[in-house]
Image 1 (cartoon, rainbow, N blue to C red):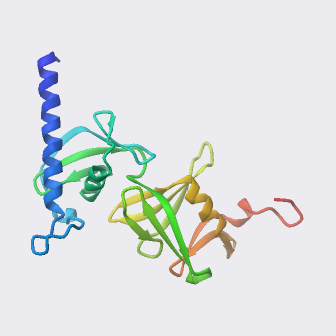
Image 2 (cartoon, rainbow, N blue to C red):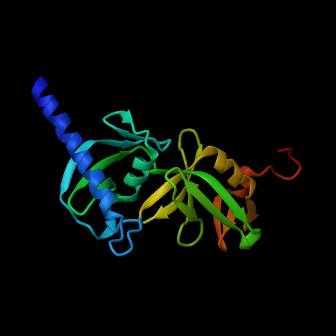
Image 3 (spheres, helix red, strand yellow):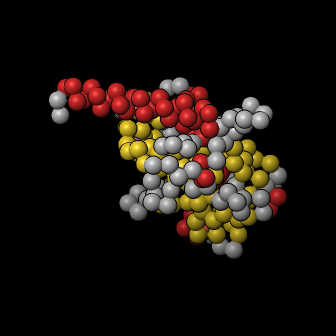
Length: 211
């Protein structure tokens, strides 16, 4: 590709990004009240406009053309028009365009957890790196995956639609400290639902053994 062609492609991608930003700012505004909210991205079926180099790393950092996006307000804005479609891909969606976003793991990271109550009455409330809040329960389940090679756990909390947050390591340690054994399963309660992390005998020392 020639130098001029590269410049044209870069300019085209930049213009596409600017248009997404403008559309996102309009999409979340209630025309009657002027208040901002989550746009109804599930209702939009725009044409696919391709890949312009948007990426979300495993640690939640957003990138454009391999450069980190440092503006928190911009990242928050993008997060409100992010959609996870049935094809397994993530997209920034507006009423008129749909742009692919590469996601290394989950699009969000749960960075804080608040705990109220105990036992079955316990409620776990998570905050993500983009300012979303979600409470674990029947509508927002916790799930845990194990890396087959390292057996390291990857915990997730459902945020909305098909979007999840990877629970940060520090928050996961706090979560494990709340776990108990129920019917042979080692897990945690929230909103009356028990979420199993592992089989109890796999993580608890046998009787007579030290931890």
